[in-house]
Length: 461
Ligand code: PHE
Image 1 (spheres, rainbow, N blue to C red):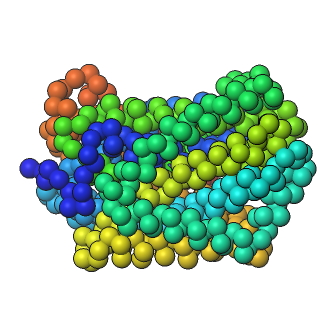
Image 2: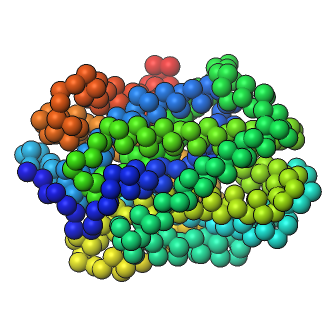
Image 3: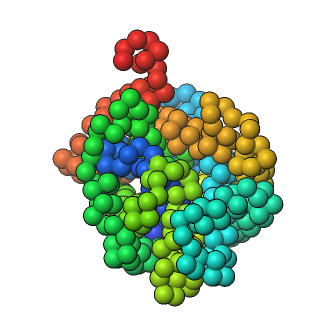
C-alpha cells in the first residue's frame, strides 16, 4: 500500500493542486520563451509540432509524473527509489530524481535572471519609460539593460529571494496561497492585450504566421526545429525534472489525475497561444524580426504599451502579473530539492529553501554575466545562459521524460497505474497505457537523436 499523505503537507483540495500545477506550468515559458522560439523557427510548422507534442507526449507523461509522485509521496529521488525497490527493481532509478535536481538548478539559474528582467520592466513601465517609444528606442533600451551586469544581478537577486521566501513557507501556506488569484488575473490581462494588439497591430498576419504551417520554412533545420518544439512542450508543461511529480505527491488519492492533467495542459497551451497572439501582431505592424531571439517580448510589448492611453499603468500591471507567473513556476523548480533536503538531511524547510536557492543564485550569476562581460565565452556558439536553456529544455527534460514513461509503463505494474488512474479499465486508460509504453518513449527518443544530429552522423539522414 502507499502512504496517504506526505510529510511536507498536502494540497487542501483538487482545485488547489490544479492551480498550483497550472501555476508551475504557466510562466516565462509561455509568454517569453514560446513566442521567441516559435519566431526562431518560422511560426506555424513549429506551433503545429508543439501542439502535437503536448497532446501525444506531454499529457501522458504529465499523468505519469503525477501518479508516480502520488504513489511515492516523497521527493522525486526517494519516490523513485521506494517505488522501484517495491517492484524488486534497482534502486538506481533514484538517479532519475538526481537528474531532475540537476535540471532544476540549471533551469532556475537562468529562469531567475529572465524573471529579473520582468521585474525591471515593471519599474520601467510604471516610470513612463515606454511612452511613445518606437521600435529602435525599445531595442536600444533592452540592449542597454542586458549589457548592464549590476542591474541584472540586482534583479536576479530580488527574484531569487522572493522564490526562497515562498518555498520556505511550505506547501499549504506558501505555495497554495500565491496562485489563487494571480493566474486568473494574468489570463484576463493577456486577453486584453490580444484585443489591443488585434486592433492596433496586424492580427491577420500574426494568425497566419502562427497557425498556417509552412514546412518549407524549416528546411534543413527541421530536426532541430522539431526538437525545439518538443523541448518547448516539456519546458512549458514543467515535465521531466520532478516538479510535477513532487506536486503530485501532495495530491489526495481521490482526485482524478486524468481530468486535472487535461485542465492543466489546456490552460498552459491556451496561455502560450494567447501570448503569441498578443505579441506577433505588434511584431509585424512595427516591422520587427520574429526570429530576433530572447529579447522579443521585452522589445515588442513596450511599443504596444507606449501607444495605449494609460499604458504606463497597464504595462506595469502586465509585467507584475508576468512576475507572478514566473514566481509560481520558480517555486516548483526549487521544491524537489527542498523536499529531498528535508527528508534526507533533516533540514527545516527554511534552511533547505535557502540552501537550494543559494545554489541556483550562484549559477544564475554566471548566466547573467554571459550576456555582457562573459559574452565571449561560448560553447557551440552559445553563451552560458543559452547553453543551460538548450541543455535542459531540449536534452535533459526529454531524457527525464523517456525514463518517466518507461517507469510508469514498464516498471510499475498495470494494477498500480490503473489504481492511480481511477480503477476502471476504460478505453481512456488503455489509450494512456499505449501512449506511455510505446508512443512517448519512442517518439521522444527519435526526436532527440534526430535533433542532436545523430542520424546524420551515422549516415541515416
Ligand atoms: N513551465 C514553466 C514555464 O513555462 C517552467 C518550468 C520548467 C517549471 C520546468 C518547472 C519545471 O515557465
